[in-house]
Length: 377
Image 1 (tube, rainbow, N blue to C red):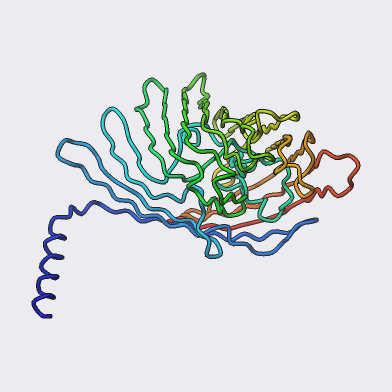
Image 2 (spheres, rainbow, N blue to C red):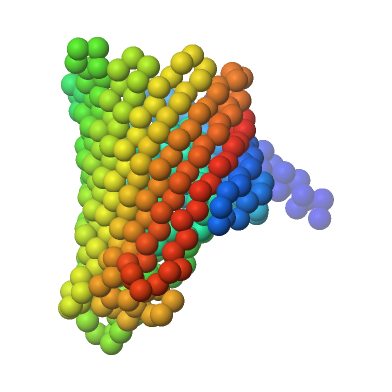
């Protein structure tokens, strides 16, 4: 036994002696939110607790090789969305290649407008922690955003250097279903039948300045396989391929920032033989004004979804084929940066939901007032 322990210790020491110890970085984020309003579930909510570990080193040929691990947890559940990620990367003079669970090209390069209003958060979804009545969200399960926005699937992502203000990236995801998508405050899709498979994503952006105004314009698309046939009523008809488009522009003039974002998932969650075609699209407009440590903002977002003929989408619990479901939200927020990584905010959101059936009177249009404090390190 002693010989075995000595041999094992020698092997471990030898293995550790060959490890290159890179520079490591640790960061984290804590937050609590309290909300109240009409027709909502109020109370104190932990949106998430996040921490990340990153490390990188420079190898002999001058390339940088590194990696990062980030986890976003709420009530013991790990999110399937960014910033949760686990990847490694290689950075050269000509490109950066990420391999693992990380960002896609569209999420990376299309400006995010919904999160501009203080209190929106990184995915502009904090108000929906208290309002669970969204009806017009597309098949990807992410409110007011293009298909599979910010999903941390396992993929290969290639970013090219920025040249004359132009940036571009492409991602390849072997299978979109390899993501439990148990996001915090988002819709879960746990089986392969509800997700598309092999997917390619392309994003392009341009940043420039003109007459004291800086701006960023970004466009992107996801193109991929169809969903599994098990979601069809007869298990034989062909489902549509994934085809989602998104675009946004953000303009900054001194302390004033404005932006608009739009997306169209088309009939990506429908069938090729549907008499009533599926559709999903939406847009968001926002503006903020910074006054020192204080930022005020306002925004409006709208999304709509028409359900196709597929039996899986027209059951009594999910609506009738051909009906158009819609959600609108008007946001007013104020944020205060207390320095030291501490931020506070208050937001009022007025939501409007419609199930597309004028004969029903069950639509609920809540107003949500919520406030929060966060600490980043």
